[in-house]
Length: 264
Image (cartoon, rainbow, N blue to C red; front, side, top):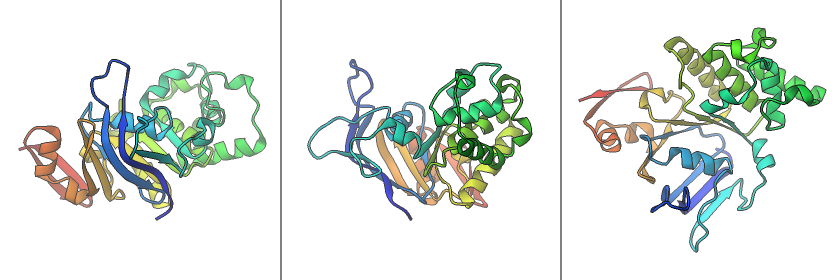
């Protein structure tokens, strides 16, 4: 495994001045490059807060005995983080102008901008990197199409290409199958598995155990702002463990590294 890119020790994170308790409470964990990880939990468990902490959008409570370090730094530059961590969130789809070309969407990742790409200049090196990312997501035939005319699955692939264009050390995916049909989800999963097979470190944020691919051996389960479980997925995603995590009786069955979950 590679370096620790996120180190948390007894971290509290608050969301809003009127919050009565932290959204993350006494959280301790390490994430390393070279190890793809799934962050699992129900709505309200703290997944989005952990994601925003990972991308630098939120800071933890400053107190004695607490540590939050990204790439071994306690103070970080958002622009630098953008080039080290690629992030894909479902809500990004709505941030682009409907007539913006799909390839311009990918280029916009170099500036962290939405909707103003035609007024920007990009180097040949940046365009080559963007083309390489498009090829990896197998959407090169669609680069001249307006972003709004693409299917949901195609738009999601271009957003991932956008995140990959600056060759980050880590790719973070927040609920990547949201609003996708079965076929689009299946194709997206195939491409993500290929990325991991070829060495991309992926952090998958999800509330569906069945979305966690075989290549991800570690699962961090969150519940009510705390680390509920952290370890190898077959140890974390048991029927008893998942039932406790989601608060209802569940059965779990394993096949070829996938976990199928249904009501007991």
